[in-house]
Image (tube, rainbow, N blue to C red; front, side):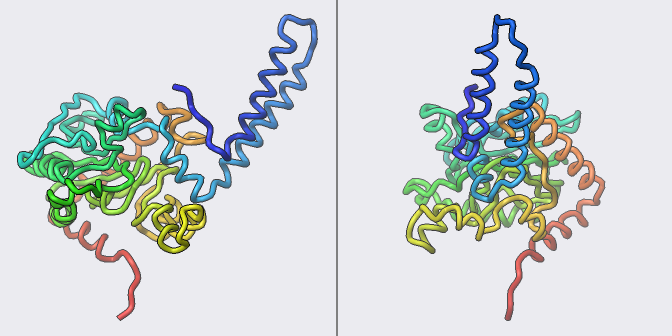
Length: 318
């Protein structure tokens, strides 16, 4: 896949182009430029480490939205085995933006659900740009209840800019569907592990994010509103999205510091799309670690701890 560079990555690209030009120039000629090639490579490595070592919140948002980034079904194919997709909410229809089903992870039977984006116009139309309809959340809950019935843990992979806000979704009660998920997941009598793998937008993300362990990929974000939406409200213009991203504290490290997520999963340098196999391996290890930990807890205690976990979030004054 051709990985399009982000704006802040262009200095790396320019240096890599110069290195390739240098190699082409000496190809087939009796010229020893190995020391120069090594110096150029060292400069590229140093620039790459410098840029990716001090990413801003807005730059991490851009990485989280990269179209080459692994999506839900990419991770399912690499991490899980025996995946059987189950469709439909048994009330209205199926939602292709919220696939899910039964699978195994390292031999452990489980239910896996998540949001799926597309990489081209056709796929994005099919997946509704990763923004689920009410039937998507109702299907997810149906599958979670199936996991509860058979004693299977639930793994949810979050990657959505937000639930679909269109007229059809409102007519079919999108807010009610998400609210029911929040209530029912809070008392679901089976272990639940959620991971934000890309975008974690508002209630659309939280609708499958009430879990015993909430993890985040290093370059994902989790926020009540998008930086652009926040900028439009506070600054009256989307150009202030970078400032909004900083103010929202939406990146994994900030949320970890505030105790809103339980762990940050490292990504390859430059983002998960730079080495999807390594990213999948890190994700699998983190999910398995979290699952094995929560599966040891008696279910009554697990549900009580989950409820207490979310009740303690936030600071308020009376």
